[in-house]
Length: 233
Image (cartoon, rainbow, N blue to C red; front, top):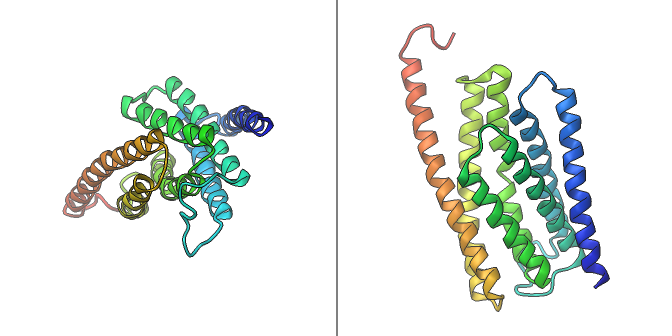
């Protein structure tokens, strides 16, 4: 029971900490947009989540092992840090002028899925592996938007960031994602955990579809700019 309170306290402390980081970034970049400051915080979380997830892996020959087993304290701490971030980011999204329903649903599904694992104290290996593949592309996602705000829209650098993000996302979510979903569904996991695994994979498929459209649009736009003298000078 004491450990459960520790996790709850860690989540509360995490929400406060992520909010504090945002306020500091907002103060440093006071002349920049709300979205840019939030994306900087999101980039920090993405990098931190990948590092913490990597450090919590017990056996790199089988990163998702042992399946359907009790979560280790380190795994629960890693998941709690991300739950805290997701709660902070969900609140931030409500204040952002670019509020979108799909992003809100993504946050809610993620929070419920991770919170279920923390509540059951099961599936730590599967959830940490899922956290790794979902966050590995996050820094590149935010980098492409940060580059635009810093004046690098429609440049080779911005296009490279777009393509790099799309490739990493596609490999992680559409190769690693289905594998983790499969092992989660076939292992002796609670029904809610299995439902959340399917939900997260469906969200990944939806974003994959949007990313394919984005890359197609960017490449088409790039070809048109190349064909117009002076546009790339």
